[in-house]
Image 1 (cartoon, rainbow, N blue to C red):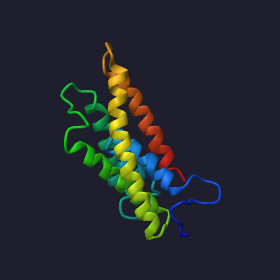
Image 2 (cartoon, helix red, strand yellow):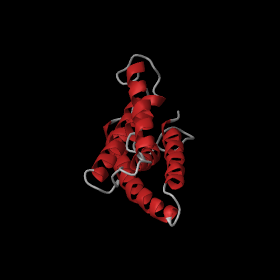
Image 3 (cartoon, one colour):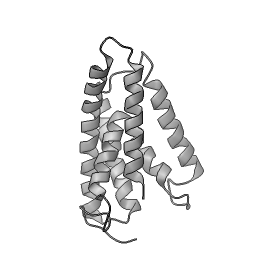
Image 4 (cartoon, rainbow, N blue to C red):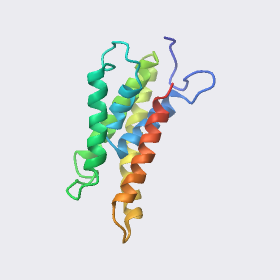
Length: 160
């Protein structure tokens, strides 16, 4: 694969750093998406993390989180260690994106940082959205809207 520098992803596409940032924002909303997004987008070619077991685990993780988030017993994403885990998921997703695209070390580091920063933005931004969306209404419609945005962001970030 061709090497890229931190700001590029090809002649006409968004940069790897921008995609990593978007994946991090998705991970801030649904922490499993940082890792699951790249796994689900990987070609099942026998490379580590691209087989049917990894894909099934990724689907189950995302589905479990989407359902669990709607339960009244779900903790706040802002409770420790939530923010750190969401930032780590964004960083890991950024690393995976960079490696799949054959990026060199500087791009891998830049993607990890962008993913972590996106994770922070998604964590606190998602919490603010949920506070705004609730008002006197039930919480679940705002949560479902957040799910949709997070999945769309992750899908865009990992598409080739």
